Image (cartoon, rainbow, N blue to C red; front, side):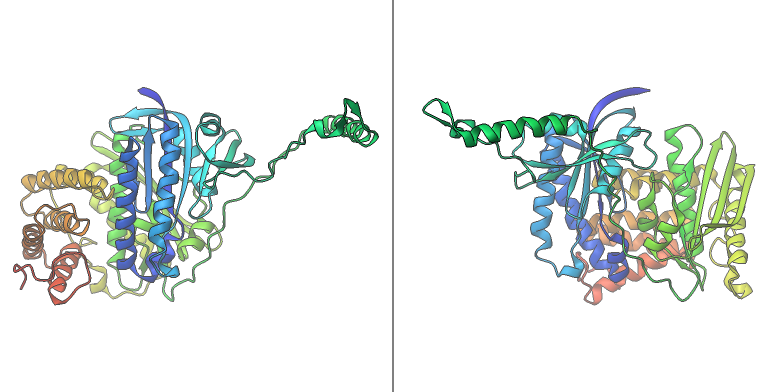
Length: 489
């Protein structure tokens, strides 16, 4: 696999779950506006957007100076934007920058260099930037910035401590020593008695200090996020499943299975399910169920792994009580790929019975749960999982790629209701994020596709959501698309 040395920037929103819990639409609108600023500044500083999962951003730069400059510009611009918002709606990013060797696979990059950048980001204060020692060595004399030495930090899943520096954009460094001018102790070429005493004292002090063992820096823990209260009903977060296939190109499949389970569980009455954007924020980060439960406000966490090879798939799942960290149930499934929908049904059913949810029989027959599979064409299903990977990166190019994969799925199965609903969402997103060149035409197309999905399956949750949203925009919606498009009923 190809490797290269690159500057890596990781950013995510501090308190994103709290913001989403307060007002989802306002949070999405703010995230859209902030992401547009970040993406523009990444491009302006000759960086490349690599990936995004909900509120996080991963980018790389050929120049480490441009990476740090870009990070400072992002925080400066976002601070100005946040000043226009009420304090409770302000969205602050934390940023980490590292210089490291990475593996390259297509448009994606992998390796410890990225993990270190992610750990640096978690050490940064809201609105702040932390950089590694390698980055500091490269930029300390090239940028008009100050740096605070946070010392050697022991961070999760990284073998060796990381030297961390906090960037100070005001150009000053705290605790900077002021040098004294020795000439003031000389008068007429003769050292005064006072000056002599000071010099002798200084020499003794230096010798004393030099004999002391070197100071070590205590590890500075990340700022603790406030605990969210638990809902009155059973609550669960489905984390991104780990890809055990040994092939980074199979990442879409493991992510897609977790995404499907989130959708299946969210259709069940009496169960509070955390949205994908929040739970997928833990992708690539060490799993500590009690912390996740506290940060997301859920009692249970479902995690797992997927290994796909040829026509076989192995899925391992584990249900954990996040309040205690206790494992409640674990299971491994080894089945033909053709049984993928049955496996998903079994997992959902086991979650339901383990949590003791009281549900009526007809309520258990929620869409695609113990009822029927969404498509009989496994290749079309696979295309939909690939589309989901691109769709959830929230960029114009990735939205276009998602649309192409969905169109391919529809070609393979013209009766695939969820594919039409998903395709509708790509047109709606293009209007929402202001990527569309013809918003009215895209709104009309989105509405038409949502109606097509409902005609094929009137219980499809995604289609119903798109349809209700679209007809709602005619009645004075605050969403950033035309209220009167002339295409809605």
